[in-house]
Figure 1 (tube, chains in turn yellow, orange):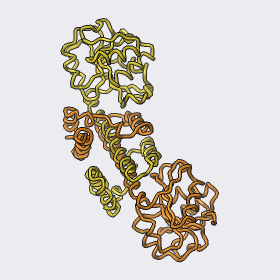
Figure 2 (figure 1 turned 30 degrees about the vertical axis):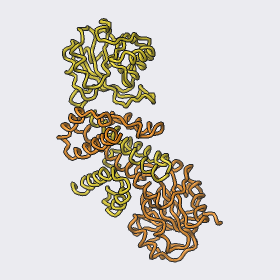
Figure 3 (figure 1 turned 135 degrees about the vertical axis):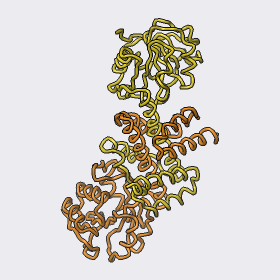
Figure 4 (figure 1 turned 90 degrees about the horizontal axis):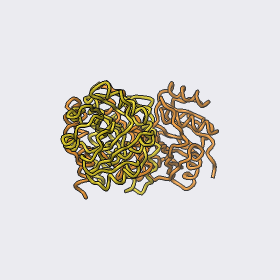
Length: 260
Length: 260
C-alpha cells in the first residue's frame, strides 16, 4: 500500500483552507488547489506553496489524494467531469454518500466533524475525523493521513455519517441559535451578555460527566407551569422566539412527565 | 453598615447545599438550616456545622442573613409566616420579584446564575452573582458577601433578572435538550457520543470570540434545502424530534434570508 504524500484540494473555502494548512504543517505536499473562482484558489495556494488551477483539466494526474471540500450539491457534477486518476478521490461532506464518488477507481470519505470559520483557527489535533473507503487499502491510507493530523480517528460508514451530520446540526447550529436568542434578549435589556458564559460553559462541561438525559433541569423538566407562563409573557416582546420556547417546553414536559 | 458574618439557610436542596458549603468555606458561620423535611436539613446542617430546624419558628432571630433557596412557589408562603428579624432576608430565585419579600424590613436578592446539581461541584468563584437590595445598605452587604465567594458580581434589578432567567433557560435547559436529541440519535445508530464533544466545545468557544449572530452556520443558515430535506427524512425514525428540527430550520431561514 502506497502512503499518501501528495494532496490536491478541490475547493478553497473554510474546510479546504483549514485542512490544507493542517496537512502542509504535518509535512505533506499540497500540489494543486482548484476553485471555480481562480482568485480564491490563488489565495489558498499561496499559503501552502501549491499551484492554483481554475479548471479541473489542469489538475496534475499523479497526486496521491484529491480532496473535495466543496458544497454538497457540486460534488456530483465535479466527479462526473473528473479525469481518470490513480490516486484516491475523497470528499469531506457529512451528508453525501461515499458512492457519489463511484465513478472514480479508489474513493472514500474524509469528514472532519467540526465547525470551521475564517475567524477562528481550530485545534485540528482534537477534531474527530470520520473515515470511509471503498477498499481496505483506501480506508487505511485515509486513516493514516487523519492520524497524522488528529488524535481522534473513527471509521464511520455512509449511513451512520448522515445521522452524525444531523446530530452535529443540533448541537452546533441550533445550539448557536439558542445562544443568539439569549444574547438578543440580554442586549435588549441592557445586560452584559458575558453574564451567560459561565452557565453555557457549565452546560457543556456537564455532558462530559453525565448523559444529557440526566442533566436536564429547569421549569419544563419540573413542569413548573407558573414559571413557563411568566417566560411566555416576557416573550411577548420577542414574538419571533416565542414559538421555539413553547415547543421546547412542551417537548420536555412530554418527555419527562407523560412518557414515564 | 454591619458586615454579614452569620447566615441561616431556608431550604436544603442543590442551591442551598452549594451556597452553604461555599459560605462556610469562605469563613462565614452557618447558624440554622431549615427544611420542611427535617431529615434533609439534618444532612446539610451536618456538612456545615449548623443546627437543623424543622419549623420556621425555631430559627434563631439574630442571624445577619436569612437566605431562601427554595422553589419559587413557596417563597411567598414562607415569607408570610416569617417572624420579624433584623437581619437581611434574601432569596436566590431568578424569576421571583424582590418585592415578594417586602413584608420583611431589609430584603434583597442573591441570585447565582448557574445550574447546580448533586453530582457535580461547581466552581463558585466563576459564578456570576446577581444582587439586588431594598436599600443601598442591603445591596452593599449582599454584594460584599458575593464578592467573598465569586469574582463576578452584578447589580441586576428584578425586571432585568426575569429576562436573564429566561435567557438562562434557553442556553442551559434547551441547549441540554438539543444535546439529548443528538445523543439519542447517536445511541440509536451505535456511534460513540463522545464524537460530538469537540464540536460542542467549539460551539461554546466561538461565542467568546464573536456574537452568535455572526457564528451561525449550517444548512438553514445557507438555505440548503436539499440537506434539510435529507435530515427530515432521517428524522422519520425520530418523530418526536422532527417538529423542533423543522421549527429551527424555518426560524433561521426566516432570520437570515427573509429579514435582510
